[in-house]
Length: 327
Ligand code: NDP
Image 1 (cartoon, rainbow, N blue to C red):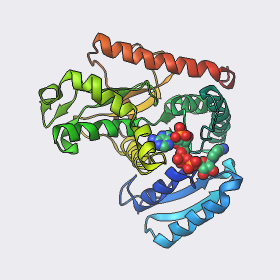
Image 2: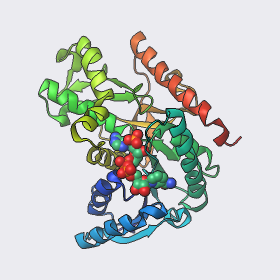
Image 3: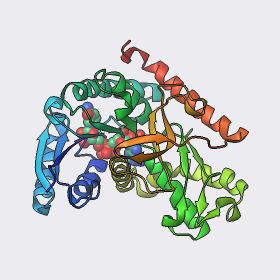
């Protein structure tokens, strides 16, 4: 049997964490032959709740789950970890401005970046989910000088999957037949779900849907899907967010299927005119634990303006937390 990989989850007792840990332990993230050790990190006031999650994990008797560590100490939580999934973050409270939320959460992610730098495996792969995810990933990466910034990513896979779900419903197609969807930019309302390159069962997408539908219905629906779910459930999405985390890490570690790509927010290398260093969602292919941006896609004027709008928002977020970026 392969040696177990260590997976750290912050905010593990929260809604998303609760929907996630059982799937990782069952093998959904790294496959049925890959044992895992879960290192669950929480804040002191959530440790009691976390202990209940630990009991339930034990009660599942997952053959692939070789150990569970539960702690409120980041040094222990990140020690030797191969995969770090950063979910724990403060929710926006009543009357809180976006700027206040960014500043509050930025402190959490600068500390965690330092702890990952000092204690994690040198090959650690980091996924930031806690919002504002792209900017939090930028902060964490900037506070981990001994690691490569490319090891820090943020999640736009839920937006990507939502886009596929909408297309499948509209065209009455199978999800598996839908290829080459992209979500560009920030995980926020400025994200740009983009289907110009999409194929459904080998046909160009615009044989099946109109460009007007894409602009007037599809893009806003994907952008507002989170709010739509909160309105319906009275709670934010958790199971679908956990599922997207599984997909993101699975594909990064094990690769994307031939002929398709996924969306990941990664440090920009300047591709498509986006400022280098911003954590920006691109279409990527993954192989052997690495990712590459899909190059050479044609973007019309409308698309370029959407990419720039999301970049503008990320630059504004970065300006708010500039003092937490060393150097
Ligand atoms: P959730 O598990 O529901 O969400 C956690 C974070 O994920 C939030 O920032 C949330 O952003 C974000 N998120 C990103 N994408 C999505 C999505 N598609 N749907 C929903 N959320 C998304 O929060 P809980 O409050 O249930 O749990 C948080 C846990 O984190 C708690 O157990 C708490 O103890 C811990 N925590 C840890 C902190 C730390 O590490 N220092 C600080 C504060 C809390 P958004 O709010 O925008 O939805």
